[in-house]
Image (cartoon, rainbow, N blue to C red):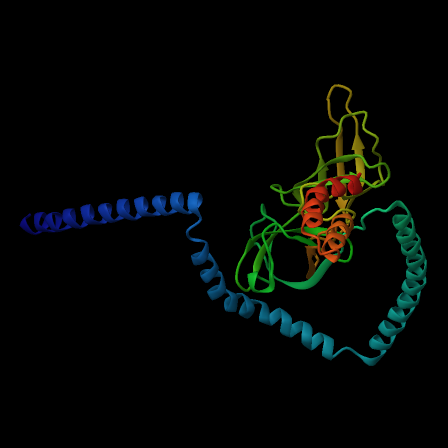
Length: 318
C-alpha cells in the first residue's frame, strides 16, 4: 500500500506539470496566431520554412522527373519520326493561321491609330513546372517551382495552352502555392464571349465542372457558349478562355438558372503552367503632353501640362 501511495504522489506533480505546459503552449500558439493574423509578422518565418522544405519537394519529385527523362531518352526512332511529322504539320497549320492573325492585328492597329485609342498592355509570361499536388480531396492546391526570387506575387494568374488554370495564393522564396479554378473556395469573373454577359464562375470541387450560380432564368446563355476572363478584379487579364457551358437548366420557381461549364484546361492532367505578369498600358496622351512641355523648356508650360494630363487621360479613355 505504501508503494502504491508513493507512486500516486509522484504522478500527481508530473500530471500537473504536463497540464501547465499544455496550457502554456496552447496560449502561446493562440497568441502567435492572433499576432500573425493582424500584423503578418511571421511571413518571413513561413518563407524560410518554405525555402527549407523546397529540397524535400525536389527530392519527392525526383523519381517522376527521372522516369520521364528515361522515357524521353528511350523513345524509339519511329515514334520520334511520327511525332516530328505531326509537329511539322501542326507548325504549317499554325503559320497559316498566324498569317491571318497578323493581318488582323495590323488592321486593328490602323483602326486604333485612326481612333486615337490607347493600345492594350501586353503580358509577360513565364513557364513554371508543377512540383506537387495537394493530397486533400477537398482542396485543389498545387505547388510550382517559381517563387518571390522569380518575381511571383500573390494573386498572379496561371494559365496553360488551353485556358485559365488558377492563381497564386502563397508565395515562397523558391516555390509558390496556387489554387485551381475548380477549388470550391475560388471564384473567377468571366463573361460570355458571344454577347459579353458578365457573371462569376465558382469552383465545384470537381476538376471537370464549374458552376455559374448567379445567372437569372432569363439570361442569354446556352450550351456551347465560351466563357472568357472579363478582366474585372484585376487578377486575370481579359480574354483568356476559362470554360465552355455544358448545361443550362431553367427552373420556373427559382430566381436563378442552374448553369455548369467544363473548364477549357485539363486541370487534373496539367504538368506545366504559365505565370502572367500584366503590363500597364502606356498613356500616350499624357506622355505627349508632358514631352511637349519638356521640349519647350518652359517651366510654366510644364506645370500646365501636368495639370492637363489627367483630363487628357480621361478624354483618351473615353
